Image: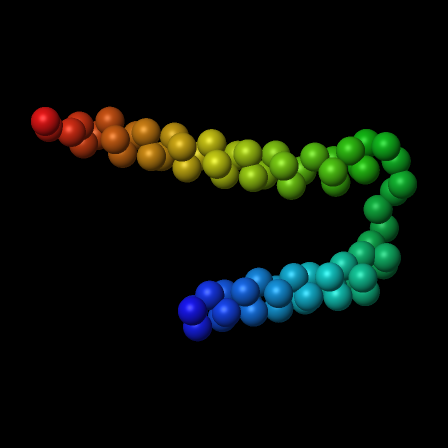
Length: 71
């Protein structure tokens, strides 16, 4: 139970730090207000998560192929 509370506290702390960083630093970045930039900002997180999950699936299937099960 204590491990779960610690994990939730860490996630909330990192989330708070990122929110503060975005609130203070992001307005100072010279990002042009174009549709291509906004599309990239919206789609990039999903593309990164998809790439990581695909890599993990590929890695898991590769490990299964290297060590076949014996029944």
